[in-house]
Image 1 (cartoon, rainbow, N blue to C red):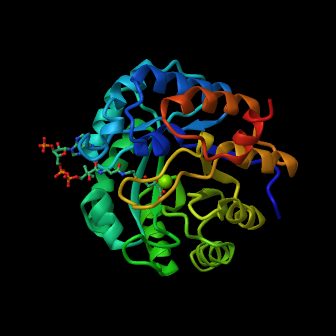
Image 2: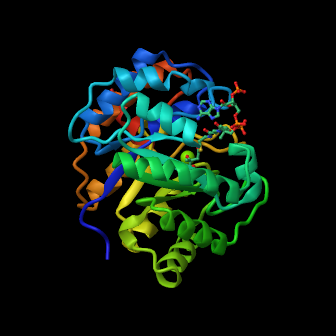
Length: 301
Ligand code: HMG
Ligand code: MG
């Protein structure tokens, strides 16, 4: 049965801006994050405390986190790849984090310079510190539906990584279609395995689709039909991953909201305010927004 309400995890300021060629000024990042929170988004993933050499676009993470005026109704998680990232995040007042690994070895090597097992080992110290600080941790799994280097990915690898993350205390798992190759039948296959054979609680699973080949919304619909109620998206469809060649942005938040609201599914988010946030950031990026809804809404006059 389709859920009555969906929790949207807005990843534009992180997944979006990490992959833009231009360096958006810190002040504008802060304003973008605040506009998204004011639109009613319950979660705005704000930035990453990763190596500034890996992602120079987000090297101002500390200044961004210190600069935002927080709403009590919004969570502002950040990505941390290791203990150093976690310590930097805590020093900047972060109260919610995400660790990230993948279901394929080659992508993990390119993205975080380790094997999957090494990445999980590094997360243990992050999780220990998070537990002491009472901070919730999300676990991202990339390349769930396909890898830019290896091609097809066995859903059993996804299950194994999912179980390892949950065992170490991760609160929520986000299943990433990093390069936007998934089709709806794959969504069924992966979710079936995780839910039935893996006994992973439905409420701990989120889906994260990049829209490289135009299948993201179809995949979301399938996930909804399987009961998933946490969905990642990025305002204006910003995004991609610098270590996933050819990957486009995430499913656009506007396009997701339009479909969910049309289906009578509650989100608590004001679609027109998300359009306003995209209108604010898009001119700084030097290319048009990929969101269909945004294009329709802004070319009408
Ligand atoms: P490494 O080079 O193996 O790390 O990188 P290291 O531990 O050997 O350290 C090397 C240098 O980096 C040292 O500095 C460290 O201090 C520094 P040096 O002594 O050379 O001056 N360093 C750090 N600096 C700041 N913050 C840190 C940090 N850690 C080490 N946290 C590492 C390994 C993981 C650090 C690196 O590869 C990295 O930062 N990777 C991040 C890549 C990334 O952010 N990718 C995009 C996010 S994932 C994604 O987009 C997918 C997702 O959206 C889901 C989906 O779509 O599938 C989530
Ligand atoms: Mg992503």
